[in-house]
Image 1 (tube, helix red, strand yellow):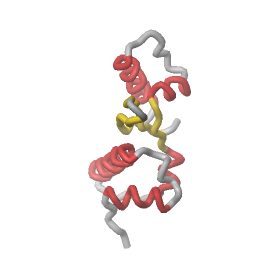
Image 2 (image 1 turned 120 degrees about the vertical axis):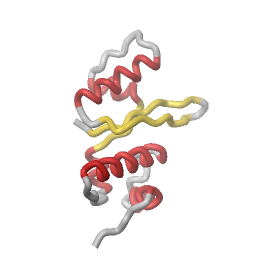
Image 3 (image 1 turned 90 degrees about the vertical axis):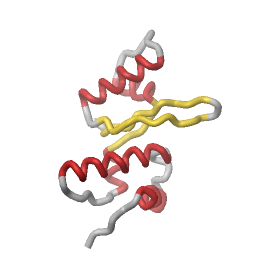
Image 4 (image 1 turned 180 degrees about the vertical axis):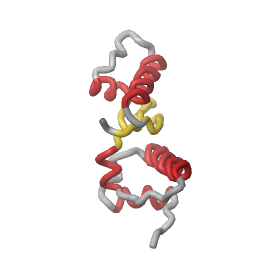
Length: 116
């Protein structure tokens, strides 16, 4: 027996598993839409496994991703640096998407991708 999961159910399940802070509210929306699209393309239904998603995917500020993977963005403007990180992820793993998260008065561009 399967249950259809809505976006709200998806977000709620992360909270009930103690993983509500693993991804931003917006990031969970991007992940949900990505999984829905993958299911539609493959013609199947994924099983929701919050822990597996948390182990397999990350959401982080793009500059932190650049640091983690040694992506040289030195001297680039914000837009060029972000695009360089996204291109790197597209070439090396599954790039899920991007969200802008408000932190104080600033917005931080965060990338969501499959860990590798």
